[in-house]
Image 1 (cartoon, rainbow, N blue to C red):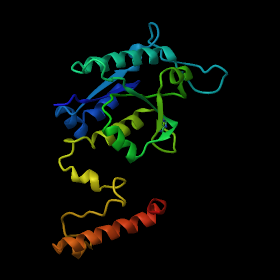
Image 2 (cartoon, helix red, strand yellow; image 1 turned 30 degrees about the vertical axis):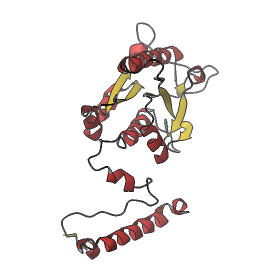
Image 3 (tube, rainbow, N blue to C red; image 1 turned 180 degrees about the vertical axis):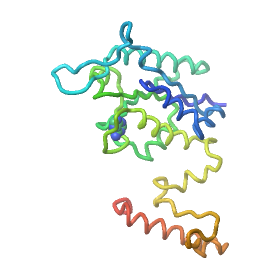
Image 4 (spheres, helix red, strand yellow; image 1 turned 135 degrees about the vertical axis):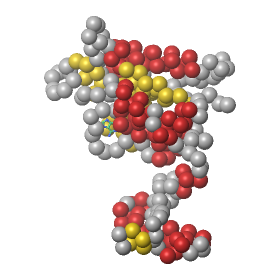
Length: 241
Ligand code: ADE
């Protein structure tokens, strides 16, 4: 079997990150050996007795900034850890990880990026920032990619890192039981997902549309495309053009 795809998250909040990575589909992907997750506590790389990781910004302004040294040490450790995971690579094979800094100033991550990253064998190190940001010298010195998950501001990089990991891992072969689902879904085809129904046939006076009970697959397909298109036109018309 191929090496598991490796994802490393550097964070000040390892418990909630591990909690998500060890739940549901992500946990199963790891149990199946498709992915390997490592969560590193940035505080373990902190400065001095108090393992300090942040400080005031030069030039004033509110908030705290992540200091460069703890982040540098954590990145070094992550790189070595990544290399350690890739023992059976041939000499000369590239094991340089991709380093991703989730930030509202980054390029916006879309489904097409999730697809591209799902076929890129490089390990990914996510550096989850907190406070007001990170010392710029880390970003300048390490060919770090800045990526955003949308035009709004969160308090830290953990949720974006988890969102990106989740969107990539579910596309890896063997992770979802029915691979067809990821090909048809919203953003992977041309249209939104169609509306779905399950039992009971009547709920709160609302009936499941007759066509779905008809067994006529051509009509069902047509009905679903129409409904998907209708919703897209209503909610995200710019995607239809
Ligand atoms: N950190 C804070 N807000 C963010 C966003 N929208 N995307 C990625 N990282 C972030």
